[in-house]
Image (tube, rainbow, N blue to C red; front, side, top):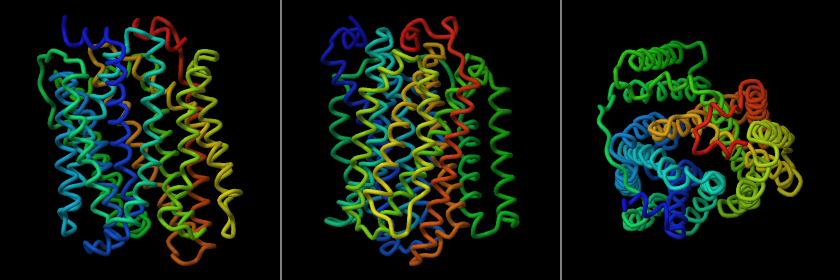
Length: 479
């Protein structure tokens, strides 16, 4: 009996393995958000300027989003379990570097290394999930729901834990927190995760470099544009470089015999549509929690710990929605209608958040709207993820996982950069003026609502659920 078969036949071991996979999703998303509350202390201790401080966040997200395709390809070539373990080792090293940093350069290096580790963990984790549950559609739905719930839980828990650690310990511990978790996962992985034989093939490093460089340049151009000017030479030059690098990536992929991302994979019905939905979900959701945390602290006057606590109802609601409601909606109405409904409800929640007031309160201005947004996200995330994974060939599971994770992370990075520019233009750069700050955050919420609305329309028009277009192993999940 192979290791894979042994794990597949052992029900309890398989669900323990899912716990590790969900922990991986929780951690890689948490690491994007946990530093938010700690940024003022990091700036004061390490000497960041206001212009460079955002790169404590962006260094992680750009490395994460830019290298996810490489992580998926490596997972297919060398086996998901090996890459999963390697990713945790890299994440551990990056966490040590970021926590021990005594200057700007080392801090950004540590954050980038963390992002590299996350880029190896995320696609290999999804591949392992499909290996464990892909042959049993009903259990796959439950597994995807638990996996999906770990993402928003990680995002909000990061804000909460960042507040607790910053208020009661010190900022390096937002990074050191990863170390015991990484060690525990590494010890448990050999016994719980299925092994897979390595495949023959090459690694497209040129593709990885052009993709990462293009994404990084695009994020930099958008982040810097409000200060440098949208028509400035710097913005236009960096923007042109981003386009050139991304075009070069596509050209390289089209010409290589073994590319990082086989472009023909997008001919699979629904794959492109589902990934667009994931991209717009990330672009709408991540700016929402980012600016909601700022509104709670800078307008309502909550300190780090209470502001993190204020997001717990939303986290609990979204986790229950993904685990309990989303699978039932998919079974009753199908994945397309569930996805479109979720994006529409998310739009409504974000639009409601745009009505926040400078003299508002958590109970009136935040809680109801945030729960509506959470309901929408919980309904939209699972079907879009399931459609994307089920549209690819089984042997390209790692690539499909890398693509869908890339879509969400790129959407998160570009959406946050764009909404930061929108908020700044509407007044969010006027620290101390609660009226101007509220106007800026309101504009960001409204912009995020527009992105979610576009996602709902595109999903309604482009997603086509047809039995011949779906992998045999998971066809029942989407019907």
